[in-house]
Length: 445
Image (spheres, rainbow, N blue to C red):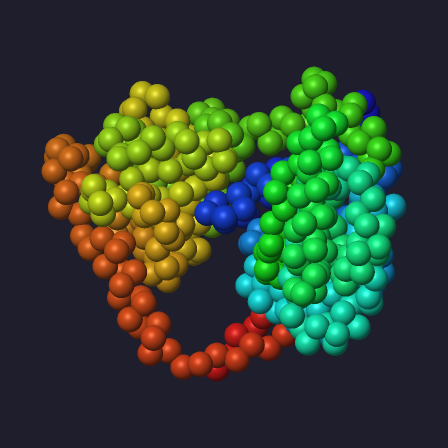
């Protein structure tokens, strides 16, 4: 397939994406890459505008890939975006892949979860459809004494609405935030719960005679109901209409194209002959680290190749062992094999802090984030991987004599952090940024 210049720029954007995303993310970089790949395909198929890809790439750059995808019952994209904007919720409205389902999907910056959650619950209640009683009347009638029931009857035509009307059950029907999971959610007056229980058991007996097993229903909280609206990248793509699925089908199972090769290349380590090695070697923004394969990778307390599946490289930090073992994480494309020396060459940003986690807990070491890459390399790697090797010292001995652990630096950082003055958050305007992408906060004393 011939690739036009615009589409080729999109492919290059995917390759750049893995380079700037923080490798230590609760939602891994591959989730963002998955959406970038899909959006690029749909741009190629003329189903989405090219700006969609660029907007999302900008959004995950501004948020460091820390976002939640939420399913929202709404059709007014601009109205929803303005409401969230007014609340200071940093977000991006994602492409509506099924315009007939009455739902929108919004990527929400994780630090704004609390603000979004309060708005989300209010919005859901506003969208509720009244049953025998309108929602407001139901709450007034019961003085707020209601319960949310999740009934496993989404795919069953059992006439529950008619039955509730005949029984005089006071209820309201909640929007289905997770279509296809077999469940529906309703709010019922507590005084009517015994009737609903009796009806449900009778209905189970009737269905059992027909060979249909009906699971128990459950009572859930408003928070649990709201959490049903959270989606993974894959479930968002799975919700696409047949039009989008058909357009994407030609890429599934076919010979790997530009996009797939780019993603796959981020999951393996190249050698020093790779073109990208020379790029990093000649880039003054990066500095090299020599990483011994035996002592810093193979002798770690866990299998570090597990990180490769997520497009990451991990090695033990010299001087850290056992319960106090810490790992340096890097994107795989910044690491290269040195076969003759049984080592790796890794390139880290000279000015930006590296990502360090505890080997056992996976907790990020906040104190390290105050160090530049140059200072980090000099403190933890140069004494072991540089001068030690030049002098012919035993690598393991030099490793054990390494200086203060990341844990001590982290404790020191947390103590200093408590003494910092309060910071207020101000939003810096940027006329060039798309309206639905709010800028990150500018922190000022």
